[in-house]
Length: 106
Image (cartoon, rainbow, N blue to C red):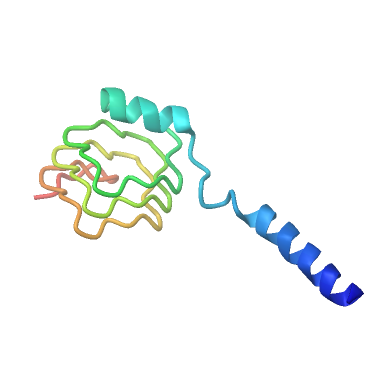
């Protein structure tokens, strides 16, 4: 019985320790992005931007590590210098988007 309780406590503590790792973005940066479509050097790490309309958005230098951009509209967006490591871009519209290396996606 004591062993079961101890395992339960350890499991709860571990869950709490790792629950915030998937949401490391700054909510103020996400709000600014949706309001103005400008988020320079923003922290959007692991942000859920699935299906977002970010057409023409300026995300220059932003951290989008692990962000979910699946089916997002990034047409004409500026991603120069952005960190896209581990970001999900499946189905995203990247037409005329400036990529992190400064090249324009066709």
